Amino acid sequence: MAEPCFLSDLKIYLGGTDLTATLNSCELTAAKAEQANGRFGDIAEVFFWGLRQVRANVSGFFEAGAGAPDPLAWSRIDPALTPSAWPLSLAPPSAPGVAGAEGNVAYTIVGREFGYGIGGQHGQLLPYRLSTLPASTYDLYRQTIDRAKATVTATTTSTGYQLGALSATQKIVAVLHVFAITGGSWVLTVQSDDNSGFTSATTRITFAAVTTAPSTEVKVLNGAVTDDWWRSVQTKTGGTDLTYMVALGIANIV
Image (cartoon, rainbow, N blue to C red):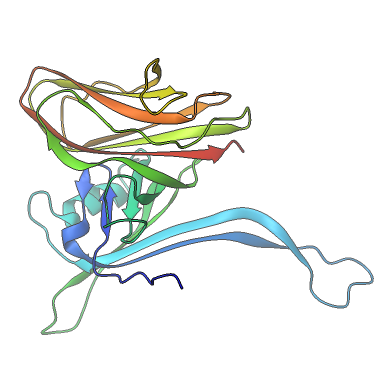
């Protein structure tokens, strides 16, 4: 019998901000829209799949200081602004290791924030709620954490994972969350190879150089690629350190 997952921890990253310490609840839903497909002769309501419906709702405790969720959330839903699409990555525990560990599952929505709310009763800790939905051309992706959130001081290469080859109808989605940086310029690349030793690694994706934080970027590479092993390399030029996280995942081109 499989062991259940005990929800005592969860890592949630929105762009270049780690919301984990402010949250105590999260709900991620993915469904297909129900399109009526009834025909003459049917004796029951009949439906066909429509577009995918994806939403992430997170909630926790309100904070408004520097680096807190309130200024972040407000900048995402301020009607005077048109924020770009940001990735929200959610890493549960026991999938298969502790939450946020390398090799663990991460679910990423590349989207925008469509709901922010605060409110409670007298005498309670003030809660907040934030909702994320996909942006145009993006979706919900089931990924592998290639580099767990960590601070590095030198060029760093991930272990790499056998995510699989890309067919002509598939793509790999690479997500970079940068939480902090101390000087210099850091460039992330994604490599592939046909073996776990990466003896003939080929660079497939190159991210823009990171010089400030918090920051984030999403890159997509369409197949076909026959290599089935994938890894990331964070290359340092100057500066002291960088705190970042990388998730990779294969998805179908739609």
